[in-house]
Image (cartoon, rainbow, N blue to C red):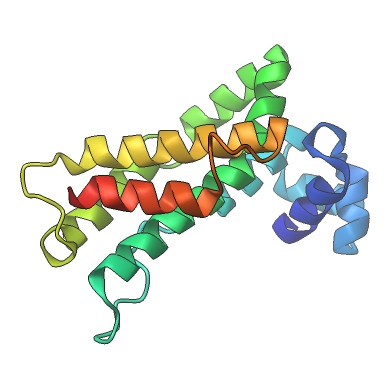
Length: 181
């Protein structure tokens, strides 16, 4: 059901996601979907929560260079924020949808603060190995990485590529450099 909702969102945009379209994509009846979700907003919240990357480090096999792990981790954050950009803009544009989302999110396990906390835990685990200076507060670093990725992804979505902002890979490289300086 989540994958079907994600497919419909990608095809139509979040504003035009309807339960019947998601049900059809999933090969179910709308009633079957309503047994799992009380409505469209609950389904959208489930997609959002499901799309958040795990708070674990990327595979840390012995041959992986620490800076490469850090780059992979920041790249995963960017990919998540890129997925969230269109969803967030849509939620903010509709005050009733935004209010309902806040209510649902308040009831969800963890809430929105868990993502940067999990990212900070990953940075803690990589701090010594990847050369992140010990005096850096990893929660502040995590929130900075998340905010800059979201900002870049949102502007990229709204305005397209920019020589001033550079490619998302440029941002990832800059964030990794900032982390280890």
